[in-house]
Amino acid sequence: MYPDCYDVPRICACRTDLHRPCQTLAHSHHGGSYGCGDGLRRTGKAGIRARIGCEEGHGECHRPQFHHVQLGHGVGPAVAGLVYALFGPAWCFLVNAVSFVAIIVALLMMRIDLGPKKVRKISTIAELREGLRYAFHEPMIRTIIIVVGATSLFGFSFATLIPAWAVKILNGDAVTNGYLQSARGVGALLSALMIASLSHYDLKGKLLTAGTLVFPVLLFAFSFARWFPLSLLLMLGVGAALIQIMNLANALVQSLVPDHLRGRVMGLYGLTFFGLMPLGALWVGMAAEHLGEPVAVMIGAGLSLAVAFLVFLRVPALRRLP
Image (cartoon, rainbow, N blue to C red; front, side, top):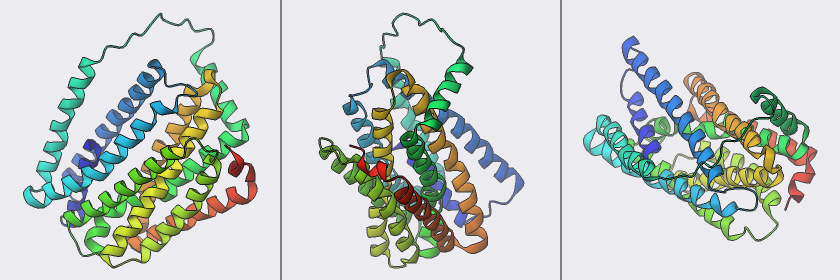
């Protein structure tokens, strides 16, 4: 929930002048600090999961993670939207900060046996080069990472515009933004539960392909919606298709990569998804400023659909993955 509480106060950009130098500098400094901390947090979580045995054949280790992340995405924005509406943006940041106390306490309570220290046989640079070589020369891994990168750069960038969309397009406020974010989270949670229920069937490749095609179509339809209930319904579908892509791509990469390369390839996977996300926010923000929010979302949806069709036509083996 706590990362999403950070998103809602951005809606104040639609109501106030953020072009003053000192205010812009403060926001940039806060965003950079948040990004550095978030990167360290994700790296630490990946290392802890590796220590407690989330290896090949242990997909159950990752399902609770996806479920609690999507629950947070659903509940967090709704709560933050209400807090913003009732008390203002400063209280959103305060609640966000206080929520980290529970995380710090939980981390202090953890006792992890690190085991004997491993002796490196090759340099870190050589290990990284080996992981990159494998990822770029293995067709399925390369294709999945391309799909994830395109989704992050062109598709997921729409989330940056949701606060402005709630105000400018739907003539709403922070509560409207909370409902839109919650609809996306609810759809994502339902999709994650659906994927978990189908985990015993060999449908991952087909479901991933379907998600890459359905997601941009729903996003394109959302760009035309001006009726709030229809926008909520489409946003629910967008959230479901998005987590379908990311959940299945993550599971397929982990199941296809050999044990000794999994950490490095997953590091590249995470770098692709989280590294391209800020670039997506940058281009979609510039496009929205000059062309408007609906056109920016249309462009992102169109580019995502183009990549999906290219993969569908050129890599049919992806659909046959179990």
